[in-house]
Image 1 (cartoon, rainbow, N blue to C red):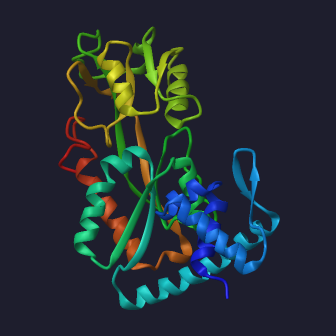
Image 2 (image 1 turned 60 degrees about the vertical axis):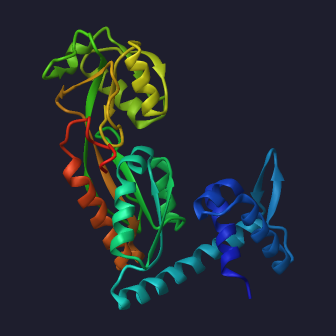
Image 3 (image 1 turned 90 degrees about the vertical axis):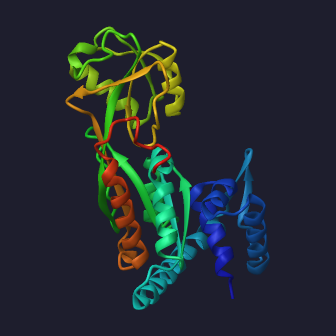
Length: 312
């Protein structure tokens, strides 16, 4: 009989595209995942992985077995859901994928609260880009995702995936101290002509939102610096090298030299929790979604100095 744990390892490599990424999602080392798949190859007497360039990929037989593993894991999930529902208490392992600023500003407090309230629940979190996390939920690689969208890019809703709103994350304009807009109680987008901008790289929702929004307001943005990390962007603003629009969640206290100015209208992104329909009855799903909403709610309208601080 095929070992379910080894099938799970193969499925993770298939979904995530590499042994290292699959291992991260499972919370194992790449070596442990490789060993599991090697044992599975011996069990099946079939090569399941092959070298391609600098990495590895599943063979045709490996893809077929990974597809079967997905079906078996879905059956196991339904069985676990029934058992957990009958017990009426959140229990077992729950895997979460969360985007970076949520992983920093929202999840630590939420996970700590869940651990205190439900000692039988084993929650494991992985930081994942929001564009990828929804698909990971749909494929059965993670149980729940924390993702976000903007008005220009609504969050996709694949068949078999349900979602609930966690809350709206407000954004501010960050400017260096002494900037012409510092100290203002509100700035309209039309007033931003001629500014030098710091933003995320092309292809990210935040980058696309900035470009489209400013062009709609009649401003052609001058993008002088691009950085993925929010803290890098803030450091560039503090050095007087440009201005930026940034969400509050997970941002933390602003350093000396940076001022937050409200934009009018206020940009916002909406946070969601997503899970598979077949697991919707799991008490663990319900408890986690509620914990995320409760943890986020008190911070939704706070000033930027407090959101994502040590009190979360």
